[in-house]
Image (cartoon, rainbow, N blue to C red; front, side, top):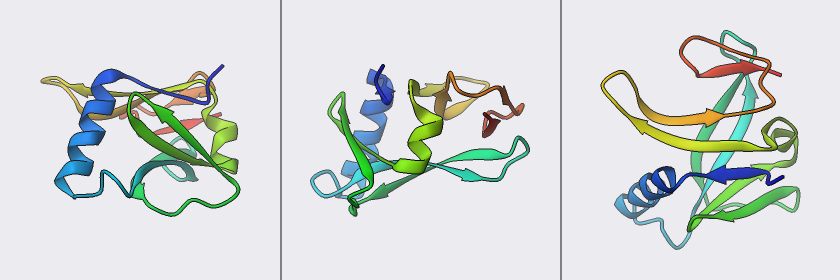
Amino acid sequence: MALIEVTDIAAERILELLEKESKTETHGLRLKVVGGGCSGLRYELAFDDQISENDNEIQRNGVRVIVDEKSALYLVGTTLDFVDTLNESGFKMVNPNASTTCGCGESFAA
């Protein structure tokens, strides 16, 4: 099982944002799990050009994703998607490790 999967639409959106900030060649998307939110853990997404020896660097659909060792424990098998509908817009995590999620989808428990 892959650590992270990135859908085609999510990869397109990430590349658009990287291009807009002129960071396509230098940065990847850091996906991190931190404490917080109404369910106890929440996702944090940011562009990053620093990779430590304890980071996992994954290439998916033309996008470089960086995941630290601690966050990887919660993210194995997760799919990063992007939705843009009348009801919601933004990046969405489909995480098989989440035992519960909050109503807004921003936090989870494992």
